[in-house]
Length: 168
Image 1 (cartoon, rainbow, N blue to C red):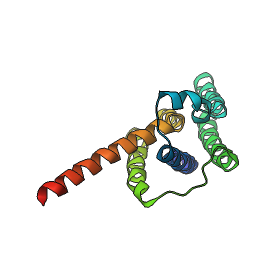
Image 2 (tube, helix red, strand yellow):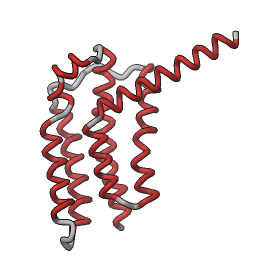
Image 3 (cartoon, rainbow, N blue to C red):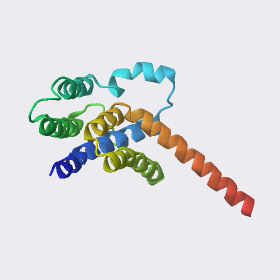
Image 4 (cartoon, rainbow, N blue to C red):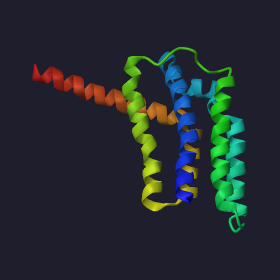
């Protein structure tokens, strides 16, 4: 039953992560990412409310680890935090209104592959608390994952274009 509940908690995390990743893809498509841009948008990228919620989860996970129902509390708290963050994205004033373009699909596929890493970790080890920490890290550093995915995508496209030009 616990494994089933843990798998269910991945759904709100997945929804929140994809929503923020789509927003960051839209942002990176329209702007040049550099050190100055990071300084100006730091509070929009690394949100204070998320940091507080992650801290609450860590507090319960660390200081109440021997409580009777802490497993259930951690599972439900993780799901509730991600569900709140997902719903909160609809009220975000910094959310971009433009749509994902067809050229962004390959970047989204790379992001989906990167998203599978912690889930595979949980499947292989069964350590849900560490998996939750990793997933919170993914949420917090979402912009960096998007930038990494776009870099991988650009690299793959360059290789494919070079190979297609050489074969002609």
